[in-house]
Image 1 (cartoon, each protein chain N blue to C red):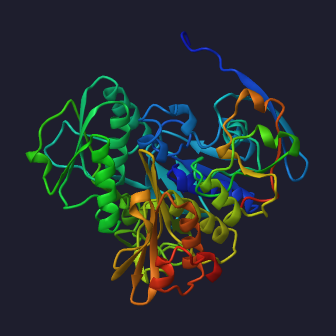
Image 2 (cartoon, chains in turn yellow, red; image 1 turned 90 degrees about the vertical axis):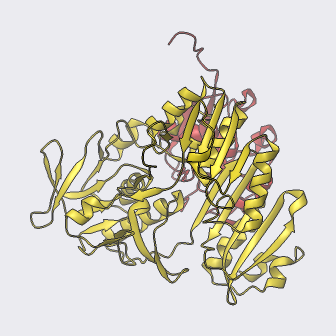
Amino acid sequence: MGVVIVGAGQAGFQTAVSLRSEGYDDSIILIGEEPGLPYQRPPLSKGFLAGKQEIESTALRPEGFYTSHRIDVIASERVTGIDRIGLQVELASGKRIPYDKVVLATGARVRKLPLQNHLLYLRDLCDAVEIKDRLDRCDSVRVIGGGFIGLEVAAAACSLGKAVTVVETQSRLMQRCVAPVVSEFYRELHAGHGVKVMLGETAIASRAADLSVAGIGVVPNVELASHAGLATANGIAVDEFLRTTDPAIFAIGDCAEYPNVFADARVRLESVQNAVDQAKCAAANIVGRSRPYRAVPWFWTDQFDAKLQMAGLSSGSDRTVLRGDLETRKFSVFYFKQHGLIGVDSINRPADHLAARRLLATAARITSDQAADEGFDLKSLV
Amino acid sequence: MFGRKPKETVRMTYISHSNVITRIDVPVGDSVMEGAIKNGVDGIAAECGGTCQCGTCHVYVEEEFLDRLPPIQEDESAMLVDLTACARRTNSRLSCQLLVTREFDGLIVHTPETQQ
């Protein structure tokens, strides 16, 4: 008996690692649908596509690590059911594995546009290898979706000398996540490198290209949980300890909807930070530490030479304040809701980003004037 | 495979807080962090995958090698000030920011007690 982790992405991997570092001594079985060992997804749309990073270097750890840490990795295998009475997970191969605890780290799958079979999508390593292969043999690329993944693909393709068009149905880039001033900065950044950015346009209306890649969001993989009778909403529903409605089963990462103390709402986040920190929290709870999940969310995206780092959750803000100078291409946007700070986006200002994580973690009071005043030391408040 | 030259490597030594000494050959161009991860050296977590975001690849570099390293950039400096689990010292670096050159040959780094 032991812990069965369903899903061998960043969250599943980190759960296994953290269980061992927490002193968990029973068996740990990490089951993934993809072939091979767990790997990092972020470089797929960045360094790998741009030809700066080899695919092998995305592996989270070499094979020997799993042996030495007694982590059994079962690759190319699908979990088809959870027998919550018999405490066994059921595999597509027909095998059944008994458990004390299950961690669902089933992730998400790409949202697809109907009736557009020629489109490629980027989620896993296979997708990335195919897109890279096609990129190397084409001249023009059309990207559907002006969110993080689409823009990272566009930047990578552009850096390889391709003629790139980005088509976004909304009126600005990354609309769901950032303020208009940040959207505009990125529109100019891409346009300045020769990317044609088409806003407020549907994909159907745009011109064909040699290669079309769509990045229009993901859908959480909740089916295993819902078939097992666990509560699901916009993700597998968990409490502040990341437990599902069955206390022997946890859910973490992209697939989990949890109560977020900063947003005072149930949210589901898609990020490395969320995967890693929830994995650590679930591992701590499995070994009996009773730790609520309270990590400050943070995200990043690399496009061309600009690094955007986001702290907190800025949606629902009623006021934004700019710190720094747009002209210098180093600035931060502070998002307020009523009188409290809820998020900060920093472009090429890493110190602001780190200060923001601390400000949010400690619920420090900061005024708009302080945020806007570059002479004011943000860290004096934490 | 044909056409792929074996990479030039340099010898590096990682010493853990509990004095476990690991000597490995790291290819030029890889980072000191990657050298550790690919060879199963404990003591470096590298949660963000080497993008200078998480501060969990903190190392203390033996003083005599400090002037062979690339200068500390703004983002690394901010991380070292704010985010590493163990205290910053004058010889603190984030190992993901140390891309190995020939000059690194013989480099000795110490991993801190914890990265969390």
